[in-house]
Length: 148
Image (cartoon, rainbow, N blue to C red; front, side):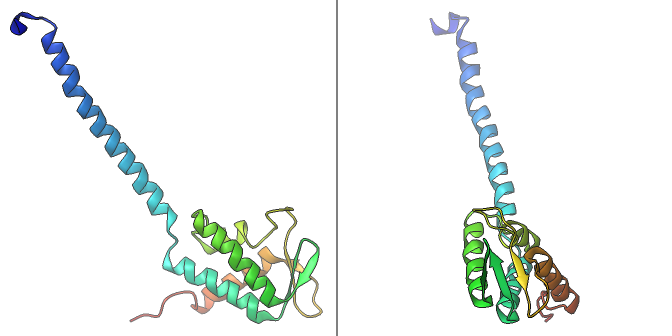
């Protein structure tokens, strides 16, 4: 009696189509996850550059202003490490420039820009100071891995 049922082939086609659409959705999801995963991890060079920027600030002897208060270089270094850890958890520090823009240039609470003051020199924005250090690191070849 089933062979005489004109609806039977339609039901079979619907059942066969469902797994194909699920496969397509699965491939789409896998592709999206691969894209996001590829963007998430910073390169080894970016990790080195960020670490070298934080170390340069710590060794500088300069003062760091945030939210109207001046802090020594060691405190600034500790603060930027905390902000970097926050960004890493959210995959937002994929380049040294992103670190500077998202963590080291302004307060995430007040929005006030951070400033750096070295000796008797006038304070400059931390973004400018760090970008200058980044240029120095790159031009000196310090941020690149040693060749084998």
